[in-house]
Image (tube, rainbow, N blue to C red; front, side, top):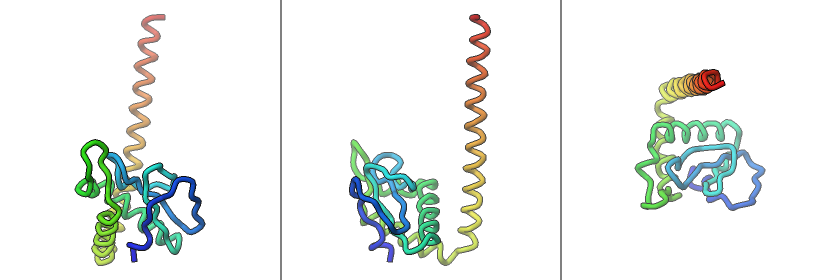
Length: 139
């Protein structure tokens, strides 16, 4: 059951089981990561496959901005752990019924992420080119 697998991360704690972290404060709440955040939940998996499944599920929910409806707080928005667990559990139930659609969507998200990275590299190169042109003008 998902409820027992999600805990609040304690600063300085190290984990042996397969796990990943989920940001729980700020505008990027719900974003999964393999790196620790100061304010995050930790998801404990029984296997690498389960870890990858839930990581991808959290990433899809975060990309689709589904966690924004759970945000509470006016100054620093945050997600309550119980609400996060309920949404993740409900979404996992939906995904388990639509496995082929889910896998197709994950592939599309990965392709779009690769495309986004390429565009960001191109934008960086254009910025460097602008700097070079300006440098040449004032040389």
